[in-house]
Amino acid sequence: MTTSDPRLTAVRVLNRVLPGKGDGESLREVLRDFPLQGADGGLMRDICFGVCRHLRPLNHWLNQQLGKPLKASAQPVRLALLAGLYELWFSERPAHAIVNAYPQLCRKLKAPWAAGLSNAILRKASKLTMDEAVADANPNIQLSLPDWLFKRWQQDWPADAEAMARANLQTPPFTLRVNRRQQQRAGAIAALGDGARPGELSPWSVYLSPARPVFQLPGFEQGALSVQDEAAQLPGEVLQCPPTGRILDACAAPGGKTGQLCEKFPDAELVALELEGKRLTRIKENLARLSAEVTLLQGDASNPSSWWDGTPFDAILLDAPCSATGILRRQPDVKWHRKASDIHALVDLQARMLDALWPLLKPGGMLVYATCSVLRDENDHQVSAFLQRQPQARDVTPRPEEATMVSAGWQLFPQHHGPDGFYLACLRKDT
Ligand SMILES: C[S@@+](CC[C@H](N)C(=O)[O-])C[C@H]1O[C@@H](n2cnc3c(N)ncnc32)[C@H](O)[C@@H]1O
Image 1 (spheres, rainbow, N blue to C red):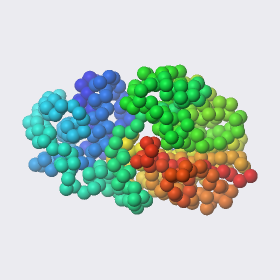
Image 2: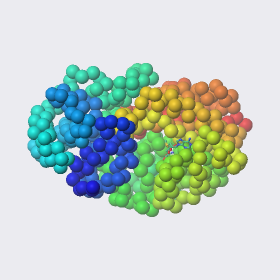
Image 3: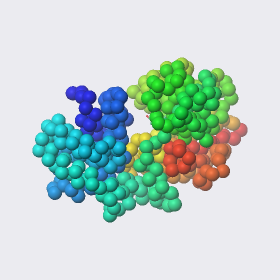
């Protein structure tokens, strides 16, 4: 049943993303089923992202208040209480309006028994800040991270782990890519007006604050602008290929980087590969706006014999499936869906993809390996091991002076400069 009540919708979304039992669905995917527009849509999405982002401290304080745990069947009530806490502690909406809204929401959830509970808990919370509420909790709780992940960050980046965790509690910037086929960046910034500024790392990036709905962006429908984080623009920017060369985008959906490659190499032959048929459709939808021509293939990048026609590539972009630990501020539900045991399987898949795709690259060609991860096993450790296995491969990654030194490639962090946490390495094949 659909509703236009933003708080009720938020609870319905969260109940699929954070169910009491079993695996949750992706927040991004579930939101597609609830296309609430305008201010109501904004409130609903703010609650969904906010609860996922701050889940651990919200849960911690709520559990302390509940005399006995809520039954599993009362998960929607729990989510409503978490939503109320999030609104009180993080939104600028008046506290009395928030406190009054949730007993009514409990009734709409067919849980009138929870109206008094909601009133009591939110009234108490309205007299605190979240920092006060969880002042004596351990750092993993305060920073809203699973124990295993914060431990890994501390092992990988002892000096940066806490700053990285804090950065992931922030709302991410809204970043655009200017279509160089249609306009210069300065012109796009002028057309966007107040709140638009250039990024420092990608020459076609523009930060826009506050964010705007895409249909309000000048030229969006005609493909003049695309939404893409600045770090995610870098693999396409550093990839080198002769103008009429053959390029493989090996893990292409939803097609953000495919579109960028079309803009950068309009005369090249571009092949976009994706494992999942449903996600291949997303690439088609996204490329239609850019009027881009690309050969789309469904197949497994780690098994080229099932889809490769035998013609080698001048350049390969491998934007590998990864833990997504660099983009938790954009996809905060990933913190709760990802498990420590997933990482080993991802590292193994990435290594198999690198080994399988390398023979498809012409001598002198370039393979760019990229992830939106901040875990070293997926990134510089992965590439260093590959360089050991492949004596014909050279690390030719450009690194700005201020880049963090790693054993291979270039690691970006969400707490630096504005872009997401990201990794890339440019690998040249000896002639
Ligand atoms: C990080 S995303 C790619 C994002 C994309 N490059 C962009 O910029 O929009 C990784 C993609 O790899 C796909 N994938 C996962 N395993 C794959 C495989 N074995 N072969 C090809 N694609 C795969 C996933 O379905 C996902 O769409």
